[in-house]
Length: 309
Image 1: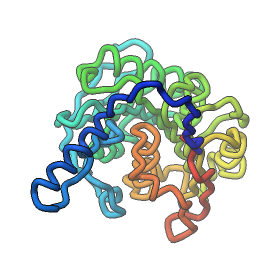
Image 2: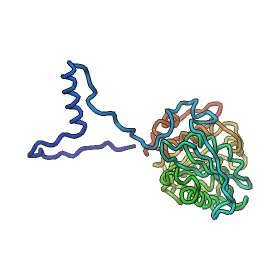
Image 3: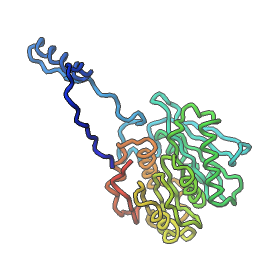
């Protein structure tokens, strides 16, 4: 949590201090009030938006569960001839009048292609992100390799892609399914400067992630027989530092392949997590804290509420 701000005591100045802008505005307002016969006038000018990274209107349950958000999107294919990963598709908002966007790379699972994660592209991009669903160098790459390729794709996005000018290189995140989820943990450990990570039904032989410093939401599936939550998702979550902003969401009655089809629960909480930590958008905290209880879609949810960053 943020520490309260304290103001040190100072000795009284020898001369009268110049009024601040707010004080001056207050005095002008008072004079105007007298001149207008006691009509109340605001004492201070309107404050600028506190968070310059907020994008889009105030969110509601309906808006983050919708198939599309407030931004129109377009897409661009990236050749497999690029260096470091196997190409893919970039989905991006077409209106950047509000400013730059955070960006997220999404990696597929073992033997899968980017097409298995394509549904996330426009759904997340329309909420105000640049989303890059990638292919891996080979379909048999292991989690550590996939993590490196996520990193290469992030570098490509901010340095060489055609949409680099609308991306804020300091607001980046990673997502991935299965071994791509394992790769998401790998890149989160390697790049603490990332703002958010979301492993989806992740698989990795390494169960210890105490060195991760990136806010991480692990999404597991209750009936996963490939990356069982008892041997993968839950140990991953438990191994993350206790001081970290982290969450564990378990999809009720879902299989390992739940992230491969349009899934409102995955989308809703991914949007909330990415908005909260990539954009530092406190308007989305309401969907994460207090933690949602078990329901028809969620069999288990754990969180380190209240969030500190």
